[in-house]
Image 1 (cartoon, rainbow, N blue to C red):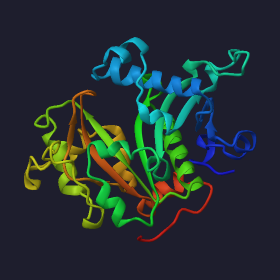
Image 2: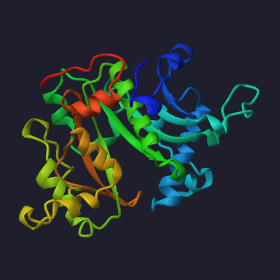
Image 3: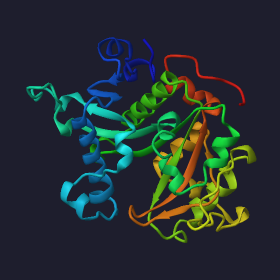
Image 4: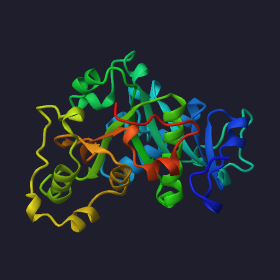
Length: 296
């Protein structure tokens, strides 16, 4: 058995893997696995709609409002990582064995480079000039992370850790080298986000070999407060929990923010060379196989 934590917080993986190759483990009533059916992807889109459009400030078009689903063309080519609450399944399987939609309580969207290149590229390329990075590291395999969200009652450490555990299992299963994607601050006024954006710029900017810049027509300066004027503790308190987790794991931040007016967010680029993820995170969430080590 492998585990994400010792003792009662352990994530069991062997039993689930034997029964379902798409499962990456379970903690109590919560399981993390890939979506098996169109119904499960639809459930993930429903979770995303609730979080992005009803809870946050995304602006739906007519079709999105009518369907109450956050959906785009990338959903058809991505893998969808789900957190499922088995307490919501008991006695509710339909005649075809489909789980009820409300059993899906969290999700992540995963797009591998080999798939993206066959279908028009990565979603992130709409905001950042990732082409030069992909060319510099043409011998590496990239994974785009996106559309991460969890329903309010499940925004707990175990749920977030289970999602991260699932991502790392997926990375090792597909022998991937680099993770990247956009992470968001709520709000579209960069002046109101000046402190956390400046903190990321001064303390977590990607080194030259991993440098990626926002597209020129979307570029928003992150260096809005001098390093001398920043209070690191204050800045850290203003970071969204997801970005804090990425930083603890050892990610890099791209140059320039991007305002996404549809979703009501200010985005920054996260870059994760897998070989450089911190030892603490690797030992806690690492996959079933050995993660590549060393600089590449």
